[in-house]
Image (spheres, rainbow, N blue to C red):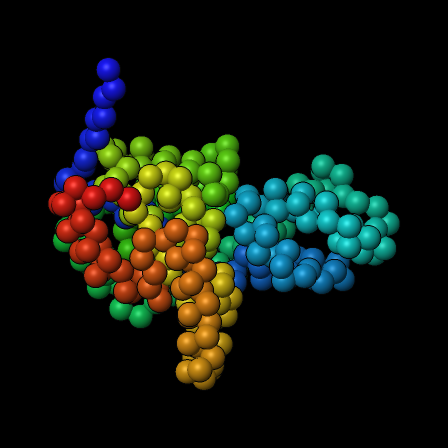
Length: 276
């Protein structure tokens, strides 16, 4: 006998889980790259931009190990320093990196225009708010209170150091959902600027919303973005939007300021029995 049994969650959204850099804060997702570049500049080493994006989802010590495995960086380091850093020296570099990350991230805390209205809507609807971040706990625990001072209350946050696998594995999003006491992953919405972050949300069985212009694809500060022509902005927006949709995003918007209509549509789809 063959059975076909489908359960459908038909309730409300229970939680919205945000990525941090490039989504919730740090327009253009520049802070981590700036911190790494500033650290290596002290040792006369220029990091290629593509390597900065490649390590963006890794915890800080893992970022350093990844970079020192790249032949061109190894050669530059040996040329200037004589030999590659041992484990003790790596730990010292990691401490320096964390200091730089705190400075750079704190300079990028401003939220997109009108985003506070979105969070007021989220709270009014009774949704819980989670955050996933690649930053270590020391840095994240410094940033979260600053967000609270700006009116953004986070119910729970998870650092990449808390899980065994980085994005696109679902570990961060699922760990956050469990901590928020969510009963069904179909009731969760993952908001992220990166392709790996969208895939993370999909792997976790959640609805996903991509943010096209505030994230790593743009990689420009808000001031740099505002100085672009409309034609240049449209090109970046369209390319980022297409990339996020290709990654599987259910919705794509410019920034988190624009997600309210997406959340309302997801509510309607859930009531019809639709699943992510």
